[in-house]
Structures are given as structure tokens and as C-alpha cells.
Length: 326
Image (cartoon, rainbow, N blue to C red):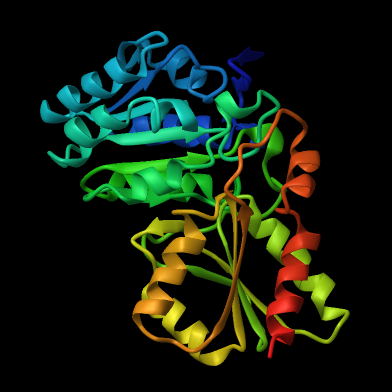
């Protein structure tokens, strides 16, 4: 007999059968099964943050704080001080910008062991400016003691959860909604905090991408190959701490470096890489692909990605331009 619970099928023969489009919800539930310290906090967004599975199976360890993220962060900090490991969930823009002082004073400053999990990053929403987190990486990476992680897709989410859990201290996990995620048929990927992943090696330009932009970067690599350019594509899943050792190697072995992010070019991945290259005086050509100091609008993700210059074609154009520069 099969019973569907919160989007998962519980089979009497095979146990819990995971649906791939619920990568985070499954990963959190599995982690909570293995570690009794994990508690789940939500701001009235259990469905949108995939935490309904844990709520259905472990209601005593799930707490809905309502639409009040500031209070949720305070509760999470208090629970962490009592020995729990809270995973606090909301949309990216609400769990960073809306509650920045609480995150700074109750999580980052005292270095409480709180995992802040945000969904719908950047332009991946039709709800417009109020829901588009184009500054959350800039905010979170500027906080001392904060680790910032954005896996490239559902195939890396389980490893991201485990890495956040193993890290002692505050972590910000930036996740895309399942319906907008990458190909879920790919094998699971590892994630080592602070170590970038080279997806494919090239010789001319290094494209450093984070989150959903990794898939766009891989497509861009195919596009520029038609002009005889060879690209290394790197998954920068950890925005802080940045893998400076890898960045140093790539800058010294390639003609150019291009960053790609679903975020403002101010304060995000591109800014972090630019800071490092400048401070190290590395003589490499450089370009950034991201949201260019503007508020966007509501619309489908493909439409917004194209309009604001974040898709594979724009990454390819930036790579061609920077490689051809004198």
C-alpha cells in the first residue's frame, strides 16, 4: 500500500521513496533522522521551502513562527544556545534584507550555530522587486563569521545540507525552487565548503559561476567553442570563504576570467573575485555577468534572464569580448 505524504510516497515495501524535485526537503528530513539536534523553523512557507515533509513526520521538531522572520531568527539563536541546530527558512529576500539586524546581532556576532536557508534567489520569481533577492549575497558575505553557500542544483543540495550541518557556526544556504532547478537525473555531487569545483577544463577563459548560473555557464562554453575559444567552467558553490587558491591558479593560467551570478554585480561573486584579483595584482582580463545595478520586474525566469543579461548567450558574449580585448 502506498500513501502520499507531503509530496513523497511512503511505500510499505520500499520505505520512503524520494521525489527528485524535493531535493532539499528530503535532505533535511534525512539529516534530521540522523541528528536529533536539528530543528526546523519556518515563516509560514512550509510548502515553498520544502519543509512540509519534516513537518509531517517530525512535528515536534518543527516550529512555524508565522510571517515574522525577525522573531524566527531570534528564536533560532536562542535554540542554538540551548544545543539545537536550527534550520530557519524563508524566501531569500525576507531572511536577509528584512531581518539583517537580527541576523547580524543574534547569529553572526555571537556566532550561534544557526543555518539560514533562503529560497527564490535573484530573478527566479514572477513576483517582482519585493521578492527578488539581488543583494542577499552582498549582505551576508559582508557579515563576519557568516559562511555563504549556493549549490548549483538539486544534485548538490544534499551535500550542501550536510556541509552546513557539519560546519560549526552560521551558514546561509541560497537555494532555487525545485520547479526552476537543474536536471535532477544527474548523479549526486559533493560539496566541500571553501573549495570550488572545476566542472570542465579549458585554456582560454575561466568562467566562474554560482547556483543556477553554472548550467548557463556550461551552455556558454559550448557557444564560444564555435569561435575556437576553450573555457574552464567552475562551480563556485561557496561564496564565502572564496576558494582563493583555485582562483589564483585560474587567473595565472587563463587569458581571462568571467564571473556569472544570479545577483547584482555589486557585492556578489563578481565583486569578491575582482577584489581578490586586484589585491593580488594578478594581470588577467576580467568581466562580470549579473544584474547591473537595477531593480528588475515581474516575469518568467527565462524572460528575466535574457532581459537582464544573465543567460548563456550573454555569458558567451562577455567571454568573447574579454578574450578579444587588447
